[in-house]
Length: 207
Image 1: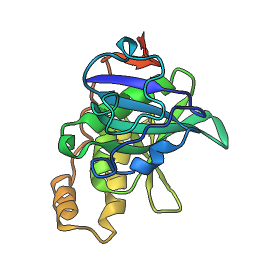
Image 2: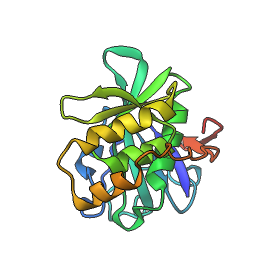
Image 3: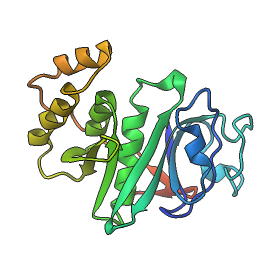
Image 4: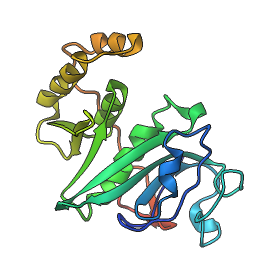
């Protein structure tokens, strides 16, 4: 698996994904956010320089994208950036791609920002983001999403607090079973983000 950052926090290429294979596919057509991708195949620096602006999901240039996340700066906090709309191709969900992608994207953003945040709306995403090194801040968005942040001063202490928020909600049987399995547990181990990440097709040691 390869990883790359495309664009800056306020300016990135459009990335047109197959809406049947990727959740939030429509969110990646905007050019006012940066994107990070997990992909297979040839490294970006061996492809055309303009990859992948305006690429269609049927083109060879994007058919090997496995996951994507967009990011932008916090409008009220110049030291913070946000990850948004994490999506993994349907046939690769459960492989840990999303957690690794978010870990690498956060590591890249932390070279210019003091903290990176993300809001999640279900306990499975909450767990995955802990694997990416995030911790629960105690805050919720207006859409009842839990806000996580990296770095976090005490992921261990805050972990169950976030799970308790979900336990107060109407849940699917799968979510209830998962939350029961995590009662009293510590947060999952953080995935290593030692894999290299490319920035605009150039190899970087940020990740």
